[in-house]
Length: 227
Image 1 (cartoon, rainbow, N blue to C red):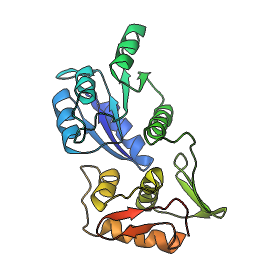
Image 2: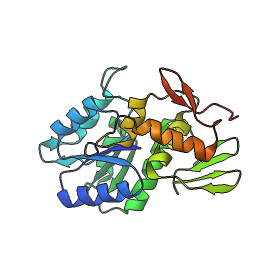
Image 3: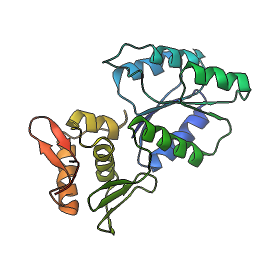
Image 4: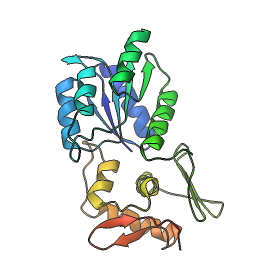
């Protein structure tokens, strides 16, 4: 999952980034309205964690711009946004939700609860009610970051799990290599030209050839029913 954290408190931002990266997520951090907007215009994010009190203005401006963005191009106006702020007044929460925020937490918050809320936002964004993802004998649990095949645990690296989760969330849609890379790598990661292909090769060895298919010249997908 690719997450953008918009937070101008360096301590909170660093702690949150470290915690979410431990979950295997690709996390980028900006500290203001202007850099957050540049990031959203340049990269696709699955969820935005947005502070309201930023160094160069009100985070609500980022939310307003995002929800009024033109359809069909970046930034994606439907990107889920979770507001995280010290403003605990009911009116502030109501205003943020009415402006288009999808959820709201007040500081200080428990990082595990915030991560659970992010997973819930992601489930709703892809039209999925249940946590567990199932395809034939394969079961994938995003919360525990585990996979089972016919009831037996499958040992996956962080990148392998990230690719499998990305494909399972949108199946049977095809994801191109750049789309997969965008979900796995934040700005600090250097990309190897064949990294995705190598990880897919390893996944097929562990899961069998019927789970991840290739649409030649387009990308990879998980079919509705595995072979």
